[in-house]
Length: 263
Image (cartoon, helix red, strand yellow):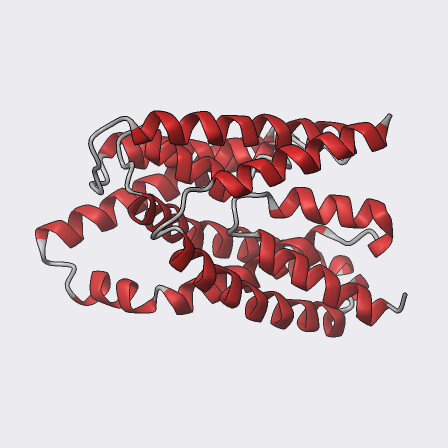
């Protein structure tokens, strides 16, 4: 398989999995183990930024409304909650990085995270369904979503979107579109900040920038952006009338298969 085909496939995998609740990091690590090649942290984070760009475009009307009408109490309140969730993630993420935390790269912990996350999704959605429907984003939801992003970043296979959406649903925002919107909007500054910091560190050090194949990275970024745009647009329509159950069972089946493969 050529390098070009590999980076295209990795861009497609990232674009599809970044916002579907099935774990992009887990799928990229699995893809690397199955022969698509080991990629740098810069590569993985920047193609994630491609997926975030797609979501930014899709949510641009909402973002513009929040920015242009920030003086309205409900918009100002929503913006502050997004900011708090982002700051919690950013501060705790920096602390974890300073402590030298490294992501596990073995298949087994990823597989267990997929299985456990899938079971948790089924249980959480049933629990949320038994409560009166609410689309309100409370301060409790904002804080827990910020914490959930940190947990997801520490355990490949957990899925940032799954962790944040279902934490929001359990914490009181059990309207699926409302919970998904907040989770995705928090992800925009989070992932752009992570990509920006890593790129800054790479260019500052010099050596990492020279070792990176920027042509391949650019192709993967574009592929990821286009694929994510299609995937997220489909997801936002799907959850209007469907639960997340199909994604939960996909995680369980994939995780169980990986556990059998690993042994």
